[in-house]
Image (cartoon, rainbow, N blue to C red):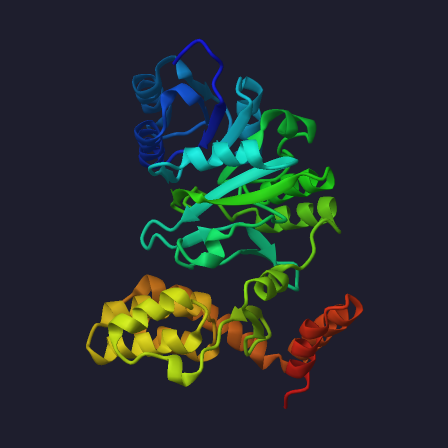
Length: 403
């Protein structure tokens, strides 16, 4: 690296899972010009090979641009990132999980967007699932119950809706690019979270100070999602803390993204909000090639998904049919699709069966408590009416009044 200060300080907190960290560091070295960054790895008292192997590999790959900060206790994600930021020298910080893989040209669009974005608060690359290369994260939206949702998860990465990009209420800290001075000014990650929701809290504070949060879809990174040990052990604590600290900071906007992008809001049988893209029967192809192509254009069409699953299963392609049905359940959830996947996975995919069966039992328990369901839906209808969300209010009222 030249004597000139780096443009970006890349900060990776690590706790065990050395093979993942090894892959992240190796891909970073392969696909990033070493003149633009310094790398800071904060080891949260790992008990595996991380404290022995990471310093060796880091110096081998990055030389003097590498810093390894070994901790005697597990600081958790947010405080580890804050510590890395204190040691950073660059104009920009880029927080990265250790379960990512960098791919070619991930960095150039982010740097360009950092220069072009007015009142820049934070940028996020498009995060992709490792097995399908479809979208895992294109920003965070909030459904009418204020539950955070990964916007357009499971969409093709090249889908026009994804590629448009947009300003958002929140971004994932799995890969978060932010000016160092802004991060310091808003106080960094609040340290009381336990490996979850600290990114939402940070984004709330960035938006309070009128800074913009944007996805840069031309930048792509593969994310092996939520593999850290104990990732969800403190979910209740984190949600309560976020509610206490950020009440009123977020608002429902998933339906607004849907309207803007040409999709239709809908409710599942159990009253969950979703987006759909219904197609008339005459536009549904009957052969596999055109069907697959059309589904990439219309990933929220339940009829297209069902037809593709039928095609695979009729041809005896059980695994392909099961994979297609998994994606259908994610993008177009319905009771019938859950039941079908539950039956299909029972004999040949124990792990998937356990997951989908638990989900199916949860849905059926909601449907059993019909009065509670209708009360929740009526409450959402009342909120939508008071908020002036006429179409959304009609959607909930129609559900509540259906026999």
